[in-house]
Amino acid sequence: MFRKKVLFITAFAISFLGCKKDVEPQSTLDKSEVVNENLEEKFANVSPKLTSDNASPLLDFIFTADPTAVEYEGRIYVYATNDHQQYEHVGKDGKNGYGHIRTLVMMSSDDMVNWTYHGLINTADLAPWTQNSWAPSITSRLEADGKTHFYLYYSNSGIGTAVLTSTSPVGPWSDPLGKNIVDRSVPGVDVEAPFDPGVLIDDQGAGWLTFGGGTPKTDYMPDNARIVKLGADMISLASDVAKIPAPYFFEASELNFINGTYVYTYNTNWTDRTEWPYGHIDIPTKCNMSYMTSKTPLDPDSWEYRDNYFKNTGEDNVGPWTNNHTHLFKFKEKYYIAYHAMYLQDYFDTKGGFRNVGIEEMQVDEEHVNILMGKATFEGPSQLNPLNPFDLQQAETTAGTSGQVQFEAVGKPGNMVAKGKADKQCLMVRGADFSKQIPAKFEARVKGKGKIDVYVNNLKGAPLVSLICDGKEWATLSEKIERTIDKGVGNIYFVFNGEDLLFDEWKFIN
Image (tube, rainbow, N blue to C red; front, side, top):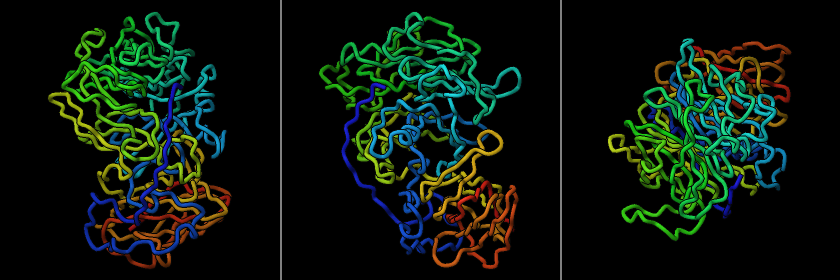
């Protein structure tokens, strides 16, 4: 995958439980009440997200990397390389060589803090002719049939770029070509690794695809970045392949379209910066993210180097140094960057180079098409809106977990259920809004034998309500809440125990 790694060890800063700061309590939930129990004793294993206010990484029970994103019906859907598949093959003492990865991870959120895990896209089954699946890039468009179609491109190892399609952001997915959309057999590709795709549909409805990587021909101008216009069907090519003269290019191509301008982002290489003709612009540091702009993307001379906008996460002391792969996107009138860092290696007791997707808010000057420098953090973005606990919520929606919780696919595509173990597990959601209603009942859809204890705002004392489950078929059970809680916005913790217990969805009833 042509990835280099420079490792050093950093420590996680762990703070106490509380509500995400930007979701203000509307009444009297006492946020000074924090967990005073030893969570390491209470649960099998405790994620740093369960014991902090951190919003990154997005999922804390699975390794993910190389993110992309697309908005649909008020939610942002994020797709990622499944580093966890490699981790499961080589174990905690192994190294992340990427060779066993043949699935992509799906997740979504409407508030940037609570993330719904939608499971995996199994490229080995969908496209058995492919070798691996890394670094997806996705876009969508309303087509003539009245449906929104999703076009997901991904790296077929380092040998090419493949594409999947769907009419839902969570599938089912299909392979429309049965071959790479770009590889070295396509005239003009002429790069060692035509991978790491970046896709865009511009304001005229035209599709564009960038890609590239491999051993650089020169350190300063590697000549490995490419762009091509896509056909109206998004699975064919409608132009010759053109070069993008990206200085110190390495990999991780992505595309945006801002104010009539094509914005190409990429990861710079690890070489020393011996040449730099742009004296008015800072020299990009090693393995950071830079961007270029153009009005006529198929003209190599039209591309202008603009600046670097996101340093290596190791440079910002968010985990060890690693490779760099980002996606810039706009959601609910804010710009964000999705990226990866080695957030959870200590939690999983490994130093093998396994990554996790995080998100940060970014500042973008749309008028002048300027991307301001962003910074990786553990804290991540603020919660955009409270979670409504009186709406039906999925058990696979979490802001933090314990015990490296496991999930399995059940029912329609994209639906997952939490699986119980012999040890107690904990699922937590943040910023649940109890300011206008006080719950009288709690209900959940469950299967199997076990118990779910529900706590609001902290894990002290007795649970607010407990649900006893004992059934071989799926059933929706409810239990009256005997105690009252103060109005406000707080966290909800679901502690469940039962080796064959499956937990699908839940809600409170007033």
